Image (cartoon, rainbow, N blue to C red; front, top):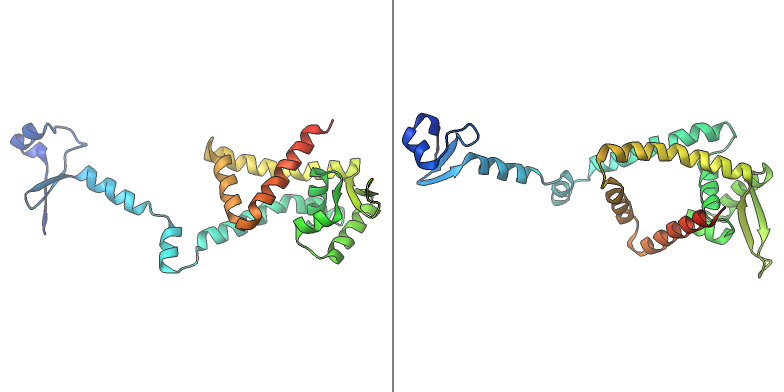
Length: 218
């Protein structure tokens, strides 16, 4: 069906009939005998265009390249600031992860840390030994079970962990500020949804436990 475009400013009878004398409602489309406001057509077109790349990619079986690569580059830059600091100590990202979780969970069991990091006991043992030998972490026996090894950061371990967390917080805060007041909640929900469904509750519990431990410390 062929559409005709009329400008009511050039048609006094049409303008009077529709009450349209301004620029916003100037253009009307006639489809057969039905008048359709151009603003409605544009609105519908924008709505259709609002379908995300993810929706289109999923329907076409195409990888969601933009999110995949944005996650890659975001993580690259997220860890770059701590990497520069850790390099001065001869440490790497494995040391950072251990420091982070031991600082957040004083008295954490080695077995629990292994479960969080999903690394081998041998890999953790090497990293822990370096952190202990250089005075950033201490291991203590459990009070009720002396076979347990409980982990704590030393004062200089805590200082380093907090410095690294502060650098990453600065980057996160800057990004959230650009996105508006609801950005923190949206980011939290997105990242939570990225975690395997059967592991989400345990991850959220670990975060909540760390928050409680932080509030209880002097």
